[in-house]
Amino acid sequence: MSIAKNKLVLAVLFITIIVSGCAGGDGEETSDTAAIDVNELSAFPNPAPGDQNVRFRMQLENVGDHDAEDVYARLYNPPFADSSADTNSWRSESGDGVDTAERTLEFSDLDAPGDTPATPSTRTVTFQSPEVDDGRTVDYTMRADILYRYGTSATTELEVMGDDAYRDAGSPQGSASIQNDVGPIQMEIRTPTPIAIYDTDQDTVEEELCVIVRNQGDGVPFADEDDEALVGGDEGYDLDEVSDNTNKVKLSIENVGRLSFREDDSGDYSERVSSQEAEIIGGRAVVCWDMEIETDGSSSLETTIPVDIDSTYFYKQEDATTVSVEGR
Image (cartoon, rainbow, N blue to C red; front, side, top):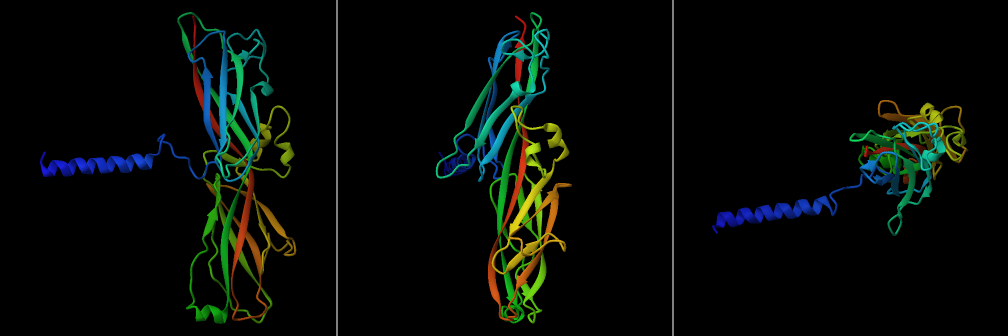
């Protein structure tokens, strides 16, 4: 074999090794904005005979950084029977009508992975397939709304300098960086750092801290002042309440060190935690707090303060599977 051909083979092998290593063992990569992965949503048997029991199996896994609470899945889309007489619809395992509770799967809470991977949770439910004429095949798509309570935390550092310290450092300018936990709601910070304090004859000064909130997941967040109105009972979530409160997220920030926060002029800096609701419109929401900084009247002040911002919300995502029902 010629030298040129040898080089070509080596180059192809090198590229193949690189691609294989990047792809991973199963060719799939978990997004760092996902909280719950649907490992499986399947029907058995598939294809299924008409007027026979079909088992639907769902497996969920928490792949985020926080525990997921109140996890439910609601199956819908194909026609479900109101009574045993609706033979052209999906019926209960015993052949009766299907109410909302019977097509709701309760997963309770799913723990986040720690030192070891999270344990997937599996639920099954059996329905009786519709009657189908001999020789005919009908495809039914079973969809699922997966709903849960979740939260994402983000950490940033704000550097505060008195005017003398700021000049001695060469008047640096930049934007504060932020580190988000894994989860569908992600935050950015729009506050410059360092924050230069020129009114050093005062013990405290006011600035503003602004955060951009984005939904980076595949689903929709929702929140409400009365969380108990959203979830509870054997039917899981009240989807009418969910629809009325979509794209809402609750944010909170805690006083730390020399920094105190309030929502606006009507708030109080003495409150340890300041919270407010953000509504995501056009893919993002901007939330700002008044920020009081203790300077002690020192022009040589130079300090870096870590700040934690917490978002809490419910989340709804979707999945689906298709089952073929055959008339035999």
